[in-house]
Image 1 (cartoon, rainbow, N blue to C red):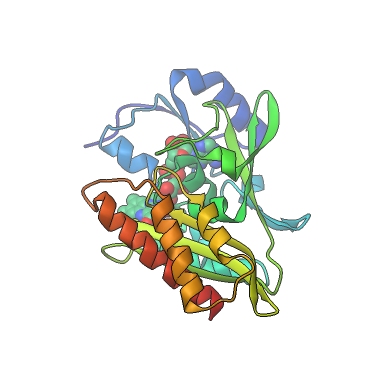
Image 2: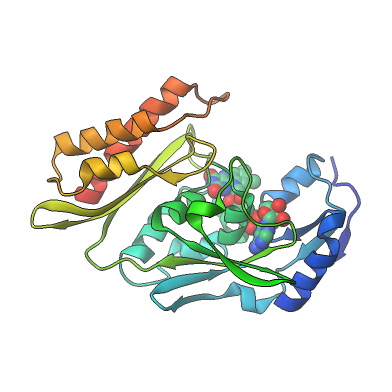
Amino acid sequence: MKPAAFAYHAPASVAEAVALLGALAAEDGRILAGGQSLVPTMAFRLAKPAHLIDINGIAALEKLAVEDGHLSIGACARHAAFHRPVVAGPLGALLTTVVRHIAHYPIRLRGTFCGSLAHADPASEWCLVAATLGAEMTAMSTRGARTIAAADFFAGIMSTELAEDELLAAARLPLLSNDTRFGFCEFSRRAGDYAIAMTLATLRIEGGTIVDPRVGVGGAEASPRRIAQAEAALAGRPPDAAVLRAAADAAADAIEPLEDIQADAAYRRDLVRAMTYRALERACA
Ligand SMILES: Cc1cc2nc3c(=O)[nH]c(=O)nc-3n(C[C@H](O)[C@H](O)[C@H](O)COP(=O)(O)OP(=O)(O)OC[C@H]3O[C@@H](n4cnc5c(N)ncnc54)[C@H](O)[C@@H]3O)c2cc1C
């Protein structure tokens, strides 16, 4: 099928994009970023936006910069930008590890980090990164700019706290200290498919014990989130197999698994247990 008719707008600045979105959101105006999720849904006529506001011509939104201890990722930064470390230290390595699991190479050349966050697929790797690391989102509208914490941003399957007239102008990820270790593990049926379950863990090891653990689970629930019970099972304990196993069990017990054609609840719970154990094993190796 071909998309339903729509009007195409190509703003040259953030101010112009925000003004267009403010004027057209109520008439089903939508941002077009990489188009890797929006265009297929338009082709199937699952989405029929009346106006597309294409932000790809706005050079300011391509920004990838370190500012105030954060990596700032502009709305037009593509997945492929992370094929190589964009910042020294563990954060750059973490993003390089995760990006290889997102779709396929051609899709990564066009799709954007912020587009993934705005689209909020439960199985999006970048949404898991944002939730686990505590990203800050910069939303802009004709009313001004506001910051939304990752913990408040994701609001269920393909749903966020962005208002319909807000542009997600950038996401900010905190830099990780050089002694931060990370582990990521994802299960999908084929390489490039969306995750059925995945875990991202970060932690430090000081004096033989685990410090500042973060355990995020994605693909298994309506939104990715940190699992406090798993983190509590790790903090202050040695990084041995029994401790990692207890944290993996805690993560599996804590989730309310999605059920779909890919996996029932029991299978997803088991996958979360396995992904969490392996992610922690990698972080502690
Ligand atoms: C075959 C295939 C496999 C895929 N596999 C994966 C995968 O494994 N993991 C994964 O995470 N993704 C996957 N994707 C999706 C891909 O990563 C998309 O790039 C991503 O979901 C959306 O980014 P985009 O820039 O293409 O956004 P678009 O498709 O342009 O937009 C998506 C939605 O977000 C809105 N939007 C986009 N940017 C903004 C913004 N800055 N502010 C406000 N609203 C905005 C749009 O209006 C639209 O509603 C896959 C896609 C395909 C086609």
